[in-house]
Image (cartoon, rainbow, N blue to C red; front, side, top):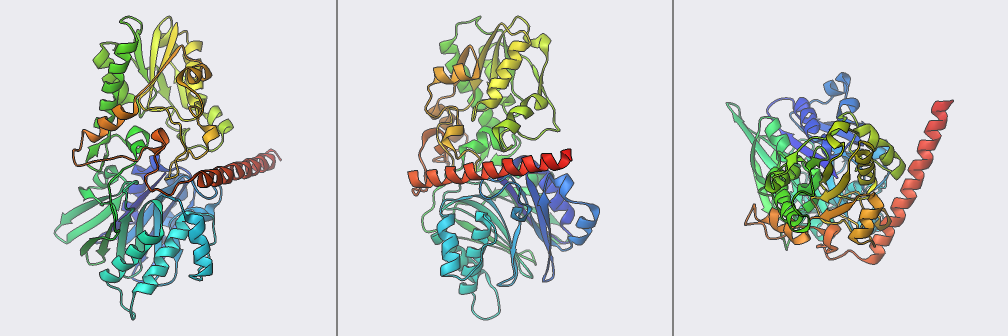
Length: 503
């Protein structure tokens, strides 16, 4: 999962882009980058690390220009430790193009071979985002006649890109001397929203992965970018749009509402906060049927994303809601951290239990989801160590039983605790006295009910249905093999770093 942002303003946009990336930091903590354009000169700074660590004053001073794009990354394709894979990516022809990408291509390997054999373009990293940039650049070069660039040529290029690229992608592209282009895959899997600001100088425009960034910068959310749509914002503030994919259907990723997005964002007409409240209500009704009154003393959330569901659940059941876990906000998201060992070590650093809230109580712990189970196991043990009489674990989402290939870091079946296990076996694995999951249909209806115009959701990690229609067992095996090799490489690199530091 990544976060993207693009702005065309009246004056320098470097500070706006920086502030916007801070608001999107939850979407990626591995790397960050900003590219701006001053006339036809492109300025780029990108590196591994958090936004606050990547950019220094000297870097910001060099990022001049009234338009730019930004990106925060955590890797689902490519290498986590290679700073060359930090985005945005740049190619110098045609015109000078920079791209930031959120999502995952399912045919990246095929496209990369096409780039070399047919298009005569070199891909220098393992990132599918660099592949996507080169597809766009090639198709734009084919579409442009003469030396001038116009919206029709860009729309033609994006149409050709849609015909070639498969998977999930929400992209922001900057073309030097021209403007910013934004487009979204034909299924609308990854989010992308448009914002506007008007003052005496005219209109300023921005696109971002979440509305929280749009509102946080003082812009007004206008609408979501439609599936298969391409937006063009020129340097003089003109807006052009066109649906460029032949067949489109809106199926946003359900995991945005479950976990990734900030609760104060609205994605495709659905408030993330309201969706999580609804999930809590549905889960409460299921718990009411399975657990007799008096079998639970207190409801506790795992901060932060499960709070809305836990609060609503407690209210519906008439059970006391308490904060039993305190979060250290200076530790990154454990879901995003590579490697089981690093993730397990981080849980105790990230969360601390208030023993007095657990002692001699029958506790219902609510989390947004259970993916690998490492965090859940540690949390249950923390509750027991704090004196809990009984620990019931509840997930506001259904069991994650299938790999995700559209940009979420869960491609290996063996890493998923629910893969090949029933609920009783999962309960035993995490050490709880009882375990209860949200139902798939309840989760879907909770989200869909908040926007009647929304017809479907991308929920492959829960139901195994891959909506792009091109995901095969062979592809899943290839992704798992690449992940295992990448994990081994990352482990070797970390070991070498540790040895070097010990010296």
